[in-house]
Image 1 (tube, helix red, strand yellow):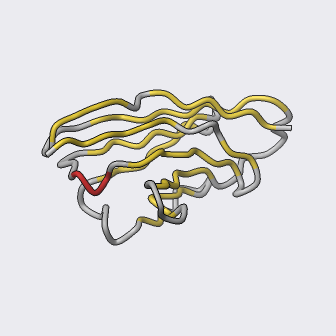
Image 2 (image 1 turned 90 degrees about the horizontal axis):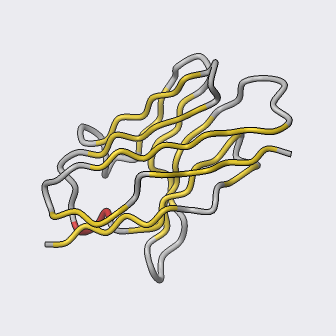
Length: 112
């Protein structure tokens, strides 16, 4: 079992920034892809950004140039720096480990 704990969500005005963090713990015997998805009310969960243990990244088109994912393999953490936030970024953001384990989610609200 892998446990994920997210932090860093909150309320911010459009154009502002937030940084999300996620720490993985438990039965971690190897590094795995980690990343972020989000789910807005009435919508399906969607990819935001992921990063492999080797550093390869994948971003949703809607966040490219605004969001940056990073990770620390030694600490089993992944972070998401979100800049130039838009109201449409409002959602619950979920951290994942290997697309198998998921955090409880952290709310990000961007006001216009």
